[in-house]
Amino acid sequence: MSPDRQAALADHLIRARTGGAATPLPPADLEPESVDEGYAVQALVHDRLEKAGFGPRTGHKIGCTTAVMQAYLKIDHPCAGEVFGSTVYEHMASLPLSRFNRVGVECEIAARLGADLPDTGTPYDRDGVGHAVQALMPAIEIVDDRYSHFPSFSAPVLIADDFFNAGVVLGPALEDWRSLDLDGIEGEMFVDKVRAGAGKGRDILGHPLNALAWLANHRATLGQPLKAGEFVMLGSVVKTIHFSEPADVLIRFEHLGEARVRFT
Image (cartoon, rainbow, N blue to C red; front, side):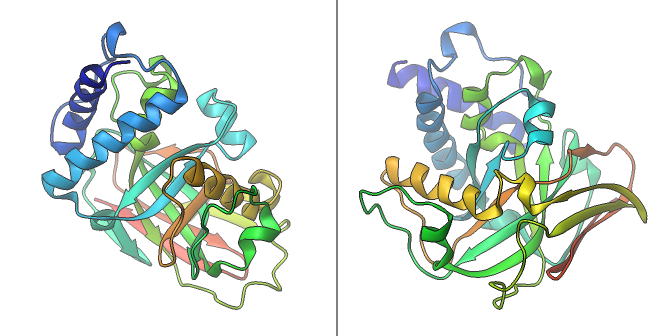
């Protein structure tokens, strides 16, 4: 895929994120030939969104780290995106439905890094990344189905557009997390006080920190290693729920706490 076509795909994808209509399927000649090309276009998308006023990127998201999400999206591997600081909310957010094309929410654990995870030449595993985690947080990923028909979009194109990300709500940070049973920790989602789904920490690639290790290795291959101060959304333990009417959403992880978003 030539640089000109990568630039054209980036221009095609940003329209829905800057106030335009839902993104149509890109022309065949703009289809990335690989996941790696999808990440190359993602970098161009980020440059354009920063210039459009989205501000710096302060965190990362990982999609398709659980069986429920891989089945829902029909993608059998993790996919990474970045999160702009202007779309990060603490504990609670109240957002108009009109801001989104088709908004949805996911129930996640987020990790705040207290140390860099540089490329050491040796792949990270979950034990190798644990020392860098300053805190864990319950978190909501806000996603937007901003596509004309997302099942028609390839994984590389969705990756180029940050894999649906439209923001996050980060709950309270727990620094004393190492005694937690992260395999067995349960997350729940409630919509208007009705339980809408639940899952366990082990649903995230077998252990939540396996997802962090995957991202640390991925970022190292890009030459952009994870840095202290950044946060990482590790993947949803509940299938995405979308909204077309006002709703109040609460997610809760035992021993971690809660995060909440209200759509108006």
